[in-house]
Image (cartoon, rainbow, N blue to C red; front, side, top):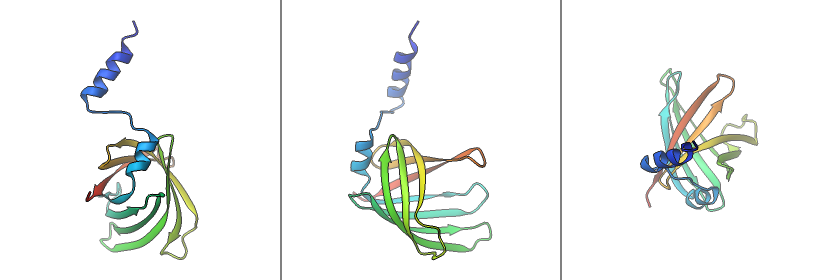
Length: 138
């Protein structure tokens, strides 16, 4: 019997999940976002990100290592959303030794206009790190 598809749809609806298209993410991405969390090996970070309507962004990164020392930097670049993936092309970094441009990709796990959950696969360690960005204001 092919009951798995209706069952899956019912489970998604009851959990409050709904498919999100790339266009909706792009439309709601402009604004100010905060991403904060703990590193798996210890330490903590807070990123304050401002995205403009074209996908351009500036970000202030504040990170405390396991030694308790604050390290900060300012970066900028462009976000693109394609096929459920957030593509970050960093073109500016306050560390003059940073190799630029630098591109990274994160899978969009969930997006509701106010919260964006992204997952970065760490192929070297075989782990997936998830980060929640929360929209500020509006």
